[in-house]
Amino acid sequence: MTNYYDELETRDPRTRQQALIKSVAAQVGHAKAEAPAYGRILAEFDPTEITSAEAVARLPLTRKSSLIELQQDARPFGGMAAIKSPNLAYLFASPGPIYEPGSKRHDAWRFARALFAAGFRTGELVHNCFSYHFVPAGAMLDSGAHALGCTVIPAGVGQTELQVQTIADLRPDGYVGTPSFLKIILEKADEMGVDVSSLKKALVSGEALPAPLREGFNKRGIQVLQCYATADLGVIAYETESMEGLVIDEGVYVEIVRPGTGEPVADGDVGEVVVTSLNPDYPLIRFATGDLSAILPGISPCGRTNRRIKGWLGRADQTAKVRGMFIHPEQVDRVIKRHPQIRKACLLVDWVNESDQITLQYEAESPSPELDQAIAESIRDICKVRGETRCMPLNTLPNDGKVIDDIRKYD
Image 1 (cartoon, rainbow, N blue to C red):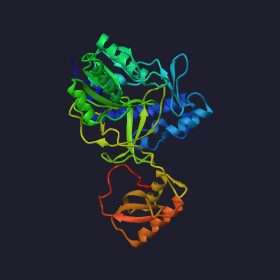
Image 2 (tube, helix red, strand yellow):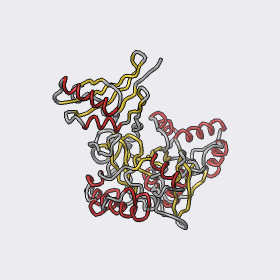
Image 3 (cartoon, helix red, strand yellow):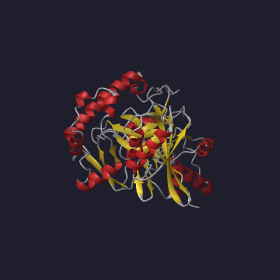
């Protein structure tokens, strides 16, 4: 029995990178031709010129907020989808509202690979506790389980006693859903005195999996691994048995960029997760997730050769309202770029003497009073509020992806 879902997982990293960039270029051409919004957004970009990571990084970002605006003008998908009836199988409604397409394509959200890495195999019975109510989560897991050859109990959320009784009666091999709901089910089973020990594995997502919670599941004989997925993109990365970061899925192209920009950061630096989906039905190009993460160095001990991310490290949306004015990460980035001497910087927002105060903490090779004054002028010019500056010793600012750090406390 193989340890890998397919041969793609163990490709030479350079071969994979070349193939992915070629696929991104093809996806850009497809999106321009089949998705009206991308026909406008990408009008100036020639797919044949996308031959490197640097070329991909020059493509514009698409943000979730843009989906809401576009969909208000053109229902249901704002011209971003490249699928229509009869191939359109689902029309989901997520908070926002944001409407997402679901197609008849085999494992369109790519959950089979994540399920396989979590130990699920053909012929097993899966208890699916992701929501089936408007949002795509339940259907996403169903599609992956079916692609893997599993049978699904479409349990959804709620009705805890019925969940326990069904597990006791049907003896599923594993659980998929949020980790907190698995804990609720197990505690209810204890309360009812019902045996649910058939559950030996779980793939969880949608919320954090703290170490003590995972350890509690392990003590019950349940191996729990997690994946990182969104309603728009499907699986982005998934955990393997080595539990050292999350391996990036083979069906997406992932970049980590400086928040507020589209510029990739160095491996190891924290930044915003930006994903290009290779799903032809919903060709999201450089979709900015709003989540922070970082690339882990090296190759996973499990043998999969794709890059890994550290997992979810917070949100990239760091907009702050200061003295009635919104300051966005893009503005801070413009301040930084105005002064090439700055190596790294973060805008600190604090509440001092009953007033908002902002200070650009920065690292520079050759600090000077003249540089401080020039930076302060740039802050006033670009952010429209006055701010202080503070030069820090090199390599002292944290690697946390923060461009704006709002530490205000009002008590």
